[in-house]
Length: 258
Length: 220
Image (cartoon, rainbow over the protein chains, first blue to last red):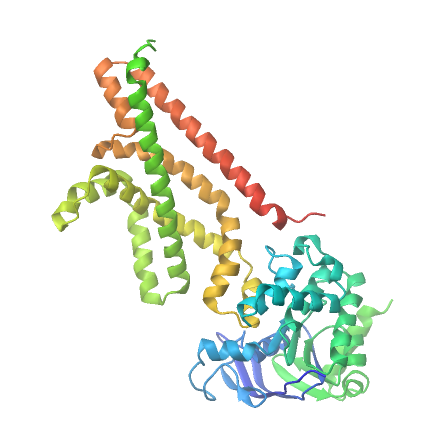
């Protein structure tokens, strides 16, 4: 069992100029559980996810990781120092839609980089740890490849290895399978499932309703910057009460039936 | 045409060519370094500093090299900057090239996908480390063709140094012309030297490009 973080999101607001991307969002993410964020495009799910490690700066409200505020010294106060922010980010892994591997490094170097530059490990030690992480995601034989020599699914698994090698207590996934060819989605979801069973806290923005239904402990539905509902997967996906969730699932089912 | 005078003037022209290469090399390398510093300042420094740097870029890009050189060499002593012709010429080239190099680096940095920078921030990497490990290597790869191109342009700007009496190739060519009235021969030799220099640089640039971008190119 890995140590797992909790996340508390309280009354978070985010504006892009006049456009309000997040409206008074409240969400409680319990430690060791998988939370899926679903909803239509532009509903603010990715923005909310990115507020959790402060890649996106929220304008008001609070985001607490294990009870400590991220991004600001005090609620509504000054930006926290770069050093403090970096310290908090060290225990938060993130996986992006576009993988965002560093193309000038091999798979092994991609994973070892953070261990060397952030954790201050010796190169040999870091590479041993990186190799282990890559083995875990089933890429032991691809360690020497540059990202351009890997498939999308393999690249995303390297990205997951890069995050978990840092031993995070919380993992954020921003539409991790949306950029993948359909036949490559499964390999990434399997790695995520395995990770979920290890008891790490996971927050996943996804359009994979199957993953949400079978792996998530709770599902949050967002629309137009608002958090419409949070419930167990069956509550949101099978017996939604809110008409907005019903409408979203209806279009989803229509699109995926043939 | 009368090529036999090359026996007399050849060594002088060669020495001039050597000096041309020296001026170009130092001016280009120092100009790149200054340009890189400017590009990084523009990216990371607070607004007022950025404006100052932008003003510098506008002024240098907006005035002819010859004028800059005159101001530096003949105007310099008025403010206590007394330089010999050669260092003045190299400094002039450095200053003249720096804003162009800065713009090339800026566009190289912009070509680095923001997501790759965010990925580094997300694992807690410090900004100077991100610059060193991610932004610079990737930005330089994107900037390389334009860097080589502008370096080639700079080779030909060196002839202007003859006007402040740097005895480089143009200076020697002119001397040979006025002493022998063999303008055509002298200038043909100059053209040949420059062509050889430019060809060498561009070949070197292409080789370098191939080597360092090989693994970045999608191979399917």
